[in-house]
Image (cartoon, rainbow, N blue to C red):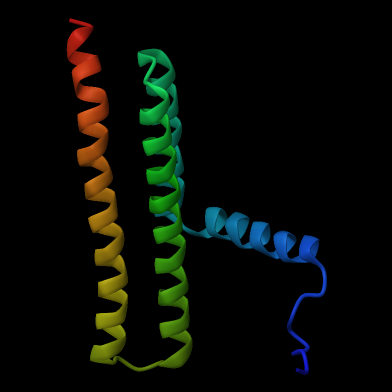
Length: 125
């Protein structure tokens, strides 16, 4: 099978492009920066409250899920904007659905975080 000229021959180059994408998203996406700040706050709170290994694993999975969803949402918005310049109800729907998916993940993360952290915070008092 013939390889596309766009296929990477070097695994390290693939990682380089992935990190470029992450750093680009951090530079341009306000919501992603907010997510990172919240993540840092949760990390600090987790250290202070000494959450368990299982709770750490849950938090890490949720961090990855929220950040990935934000990046995928950004990709969908960019691609939709590339495809159509005029107002299009389906383009709006695609963007709204992607944003809604991020919102569902973020709200679910808040619920799970509340179950992990609230009892520990209450026990401090």
